[in-house]
Length: 309
Image (tube, rainbow, N blue to C red; front, side, top):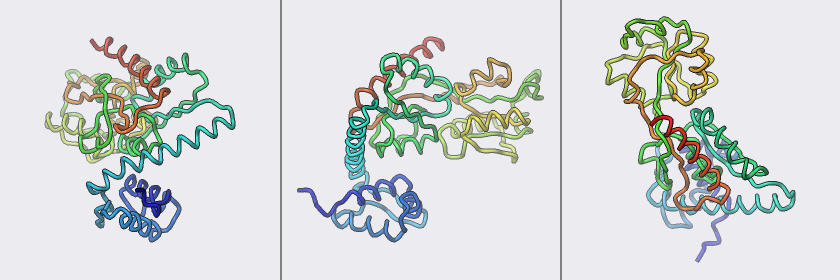
């Protein structure tokens, strides 16, 4: 029997605390006080008779019971959002909406082609495309804010409640501006990388770990002059305006390399190869429109695999 003491605010606070990993940040996101969030979570735990979070000075982390409850709480909130959206669409006679989260490399290369193909079948469907880090997008997916995420495969401990489908492989690469001292070095010396500023993905991200493995394997020390970013727009502008060596997913700068504005350094990229795929919730079947979008993404990715092969 459902405990009638559990209200929507309990689910909202629980999901936001799980998403933020912090009571303070959850309170800020919900525009309520920290004590109010703590009280609401305590009420929820008392109603369930289980501790949902491990609390520490660093923040909060889901317990095993919290992970179990999150799948169902997120599904409930997602169903409510879908119901509200359905009523809103019926009132406005507007089109349907499908939401996709994409990493920068996917946003630049795969997604525009996939959306062109998708719109041939679903012209009136509004597609909301969000970019960001893998961690941020997967958190939104769990909460039901996104229907699908397209990006790099993350570590197994980050895939709880999610399903990943590989669609193609893509390496990280190192690029510099045209005319950079390294762009014409003969022969190219990997050790020279440490003499120039580095533009890198943020520490802790999947793609940063790939870059770090490459550098360690080749005995290259990072320079003290570093910039960290996941923004392709900023990374491109910084590389063009400086002598920085930019570590970036290959798919994000295909056009720049073809145009000659950026030059790819002659390195072995195999150590930085990553799996690109579609991530969905494992507890909820995608909507028909989300499935249609996924099919167009698979079709475009198939073309990438054919080109690579």
